[in-house]
Length: 187
Image (cartoon, rainbow, N blue to C red; front, side):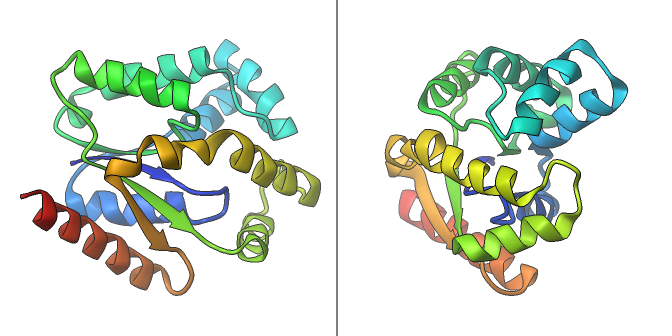
């Protein structure tokens, strides 16, 4: 299964991606984790990404797209994956479609995780990451609304919305039920 997870920062995409990855037997590919790894190692990509991560702006498409293209080419992702953090814009979605199309594949579904802003802000403040200040978090919410929310219209035909409030296990079950229902309707 090839999935993209979308939702505002703090909606629990990473937590759900880990749980769904295990349930579905496909790798969780998190651009945030990949960027943090490069930042920690001080690579040129990491230094470039850090400027954007610290200010709450999106890392440029060409940097993120190249990183994702390279990761999806690895053997464990050939038969499926969960993308968390990419695409965030319609141009990135088109790039992903081209990457997948070159291998004769396409996305199966896009899972949108939704939660009230006060819930996501509290979650992010609770993580304790140095770049998670109140101002940066609120700015990320605005960036998401302006640049990422248009993906919902772009992916309308394969979009599944999951309420991301409550115990992690309940949210995972809602996501699995949405995927099962979508497969039932498609099959």
